[in-house]
Image (tube, rainbow, N blue to C red; front, side, top):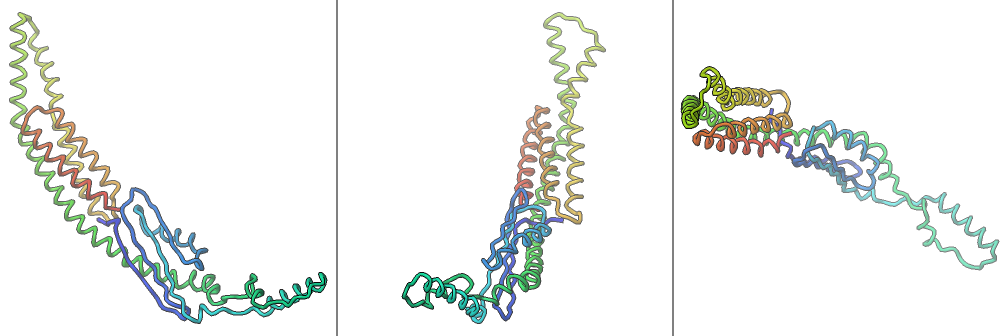
Length: 295
């Protein structure tokens, strides 16, 4: 399965206290990072949002943003008469004790802590938002967010599979060229060694010479690299068709593929094979760029 790390979704709901909207947006990132932006009244819910969001994805940078348009009645201020009366009595008592002749201003008293209260909004922050509205909004937004990421993942899958097919063609070309170049390279190396021996008038045991030539030729052999590349490509397809998005594993396989091509390029002097290796590396790099977008 291919799932993109990039996604966006918005969910909203209306209540008697106002309208709440929750936005999920994510971009590529090597690790899992979560940012939560809440209204001041819901600040206590930030750990809860982090916990819920961590279970939604494995890597990427996710931002959760909540906004609330409060209903007019929820913004109404309530006067706490009991607190106001206590303030008034205490201040009046202190004034009489000090012998100060000055009226007590109600305008000054209403600004004291606890005199004005917003009971609806505070109750919302403690109960309805934490247990009901926010949970439902997060579930709804997560559904749309995951659908968008899966759609983007399908586009990535098409692009990556196209580059993978290009890589297979280049590797087939390398194997075809190697079958012809291997014998020619062995004969050319034998001829050069023979000429060097003739020029130096040296005598060497023929069986020993054949063994040494075989050892050198083995260092040029790329059959192990091409076999491992075939295995990497098969495993790549297995991960891609699995039940989960395996961006990290695919990224690792691409690194291994690149290593095999580099080894082939360093072993073989044939110009045609080297050019095919360059094309293979280009296909691998295009795959790697797309895989960086996968979860």
